[in-house]
Length: 98
View 1 (tube, rainbow, N blue to C red):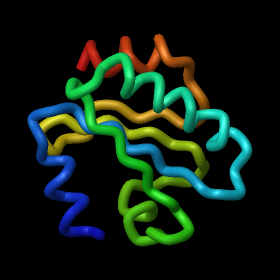
View 2: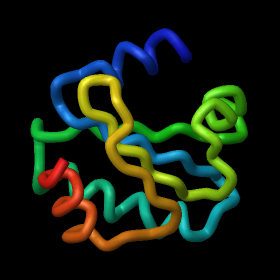
View 3: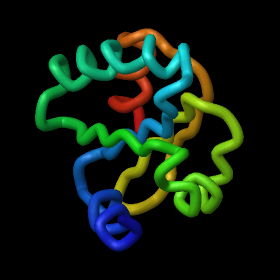
View 4: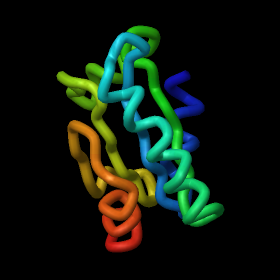
């Protein structure tokens, strides 16, 4: 997972990473919101979901202490981070401003 993760975040296209867990209620609320974001932005963003229970080393590397936590990468650099659920328009505004 680690090598492919690094290849994904090196993209010129912004990459929104959603660190989540299956048992997390707010994570379940965020999933359809992220689908709407992808629907609105299309090829303008890549959205990947990382299960913290299955990818503990990656979650530890990015110091994910609570879920959901979203990180936005551009050209391999983290440009934004937020824990909790945001609305579709907030997420789109953040992606477009970075």
